[in-house]
Length: 453
Image (cartoon, rainbow, N blue to C red; front, side):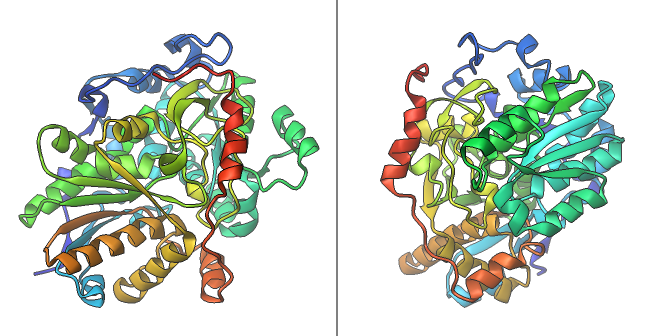
């Protein structure tokens, strides 16, 4: 039997799954940064088209995917589900490991699943330009690709550490017509302010978000696009988990555990939310969120209201956070260097519907190299964190003598991240863990903010 499980093209999902319809406890409302009152649609209108605002606030369980979006997604979807038999043999485990291969998208990651949708709705609303931020560059390249499909100009503020580490991500953006700017930059008020205070800062996603938001609100023909965290972003990503569920059903399997890496939460939400729905309905399935020990938002951050950006321009969201002033070290998994996380993911952790663990980058890259040598694909640095947890789970199954079924999100390839592998292979990476003193310092930014329920 083939280890690759392909879903027929005509069975690509026709609707996104909205977890807000099934949450046992509703999300706490986002708060306006000026009034500290719940945000309404009119407050978000300067940033997003109304169609996305409606999706952000909807509690409709299934939201139809427009045919124009499905036509673009069909360039690479449905993505394959592959049984990692080579990794299974190397580990000597009775576990069955399946990975959902999102690296086959044009941008090499899961990010185009929402980039295409956001570009479509913005173009339909008459928007001419999009601004955004990016950590490792997967989101910036995905939005540049989607902008090219729908005739939109795209301006990307890329975290400076990643801009320096990953020049070919910038080239990808430029090839698709995007403009990539290292953040913080001298082109925005918030960027100039940060550079004046800390000229040598490696940057952070919070800083880059502030710059992109500032540019968007200055022009009525410009809107802002976010690659993670918000409800509508996780909604668009559920095509991953919906497809994976059907593919496993084709081989008579159901996961005992679902694993994904977490930065802002879009990749994890995409693979996990359809299975969270099953768990709420009574299915026995563990769902594991994996983050870096250098940015331990879920495992060491409190659940609190906080800004999504350093410049305090976004609404406050109830989420696990390390504080909007937090600047994580410049680890190579740039897509996981975010101080907060999607409110949906925080809600699920608080309700004990998912669990969270942290792994260091040395353990992560060790798993990534083992995966490359047994399965052939070089994983993105972010993806290696999910693979580290997969190795742990497979070895636990071996010790227990249990034939567990493991589903892991292979969120992207690392073919433009080879500098990080060079650093690992030459013993230049350290198993960094964020000192408690730095977390305590960063959390002082929460003083005076409203308390989360």
